[in-house]
Image 1 (cartoon, rainbow, N blue to C red):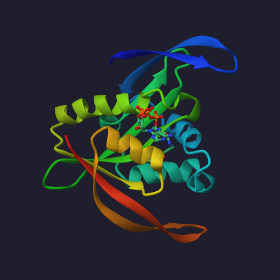
Image 2 (cartoon, rainbow, N blue to C red):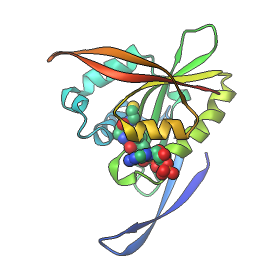
Image 3 (cartoon, helix red, strand yellow):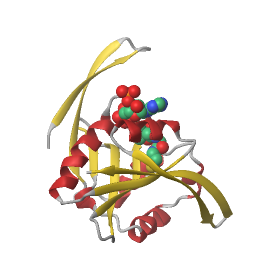
Length: 181
Ligand SMILES: CC(C)(COP(=O)(O)OP(=O)(O)OC[C@H]1O[C@@H](n2cnc3c(N)ncnc32)[C@H](O)[C@@H]1OP(=O)(O)O)[C@@H](O)C(=O)NCCC(=O)NCCS
């Protein structure tokens, strides 16, 4: 897929670093690599302290994660997966894709990497004849909500979900968001 060249200034080091980011679908990326990127990108979220590699894999399986309609961004110097959007196909009359997880590891944020993934995602979903793209986002996750609204999603509903973990249940307040592909 295409390459993107980005310039980054590290204020403390006062040096300019050229960082090449490459994008591709995720068929050749292991669950361990996905897990590592997930743990870094969701650092500080309560869910990471409750998530093990096994529960992460179970979640992906339960949600029918499909690597062929998911996209990652890689630092081309290190090969590290630095940002990702993991999708599944929902069983609906109108072909609908669902965003299971989206994240960018902290030191790669605010460079437009997620936005670029979503631009590429729209084309990939069109090629797969998907008509609707949907997900839910926590109402208080302003970064993610800002991202989703800026790439073309709009709010459809407010929903209250119950999350159950070994430590108990809790309610989460979310928006259901959708985009016509
Ligand atoms: C949300 C997240 C994926 C954004 O990734 P990113 O690669 O930094 O996003 P981009 O640089 O492509 O930003 C695109 C747009 O999103 C919005 N956005 C991103 N970070 C934001 C922030 N901290 N505050 C407000 N808006 C933000 C902005 O509209 C931004 O456009 P702009 O930079 O031109 O203003 C990243 O912050 C993250 O991993 N958060 C933790 C995990 C998470 O919440 N995932 C989403 C729920 S599954």
